[in-house]
Length: 316
Image 1 (cartoon, rainbow, N blue to C red):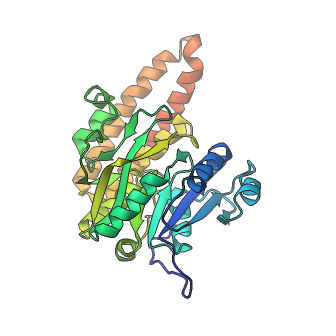
Image 2 (cartoon, one colour; image 1 turned 45 degrees about the horizontal axis):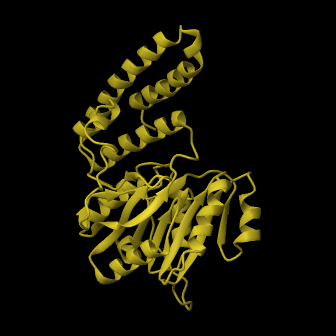
Image 3 (cartoon, rainbow, N blue to C red; image 1 turned 90 degrees about the horizontal axis):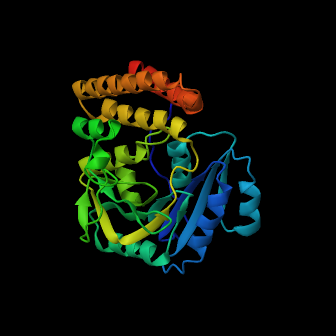
């Protein structure tokens, strides 16, 4: 049985830092090192600790940490247990008043991290805060989003949403601080007492969907999630998984979220819609397969879409 979110225990008798930075690593050494470098070179005013949970990396990440960042607490798994379970391991071993979930393919700055801590200190109703994610060239990547609807998911899956605005369904060009539904956990600061109340990340999500589920629970428990437009983080994005493997996990996360948080009718409607759209894509790629120059990518796309179809039929 997959473990469910559990209560958080802090270590007694030790001075708690302001913030515990929790990163999960899986064969991403080339991004982990500059990420940690940006953290320790950021001249943070807030007192912080860093915990890296390694999901069985074989790329030398552990040796790099021991050599260049000995102050980091390493939690070692023998296999890839998923993002949500590994993040929970880090949270449960942390001591900070706030927990920063941080992707290892990010570059942070001290001004933004301090602004997040200061905002949480002055807004006791805030369960979580985050800001703008930027591409490496400094252009806007994503901000905040509304909780899912069937219309929204159709526009995403059909690729029509990208014609409405760039980055759909993510908003974030607003210059005003505002309460939102959910933010990416690429850089998300959480209040420990809020997690004490609603529980940790749901470990049934291997990756994708876990942060939406957590913020959904925060909102329904009376906590607010704030978007801070002056907070910026560089995010490379999608560096651990290829797009075909990522597609299946994204769809799984969406369908699991509907199954857990929405009505049975909505959950069934989502799976049917994904199934029909994916079947159409499968047929289109089947036609492309007969073109010699397209056979390589068509084979990958067919395999990926068939995985999604199986998932629509039987959600694991």
